[in-house]
Amino acid sequence: MQWKNLKALLAMEKIDSTTHNGALKQFNFIYIYKGDGTFTPEDYQKIARAEQIRNASDYDDFYVASKEEAQLQVKNAGYFIEKVEKYIENNT
Image (cartoon, rainbow, N blue to C red; front, side, top):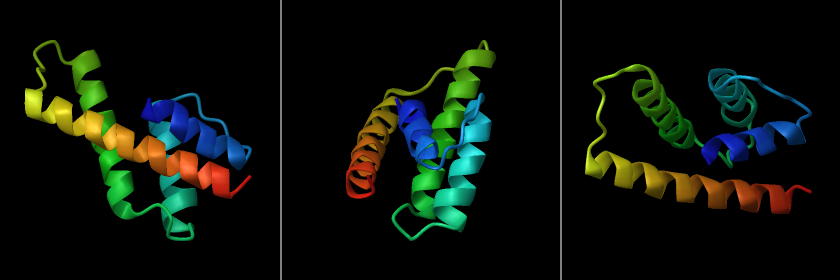
């Protein structure tokens, strides 16, 4: 779900990315490095961690996420979704 929200943010800047990693890099540059402070380096770290887990679960045959890690990712996704929705609402 974070992927679609990340794409929505990038669409506001008329930027498209065909890969998760590309979208993550664009988010980091536009909203963290050059941003207004709405999104923080901690937000980037949460999304980057979700991307690491996604890659591991897709490509590592022996990767198993713990229940705690899964619960943390669900919590972080909810946080990010709310933050993106507020940002879009305030900037459109």
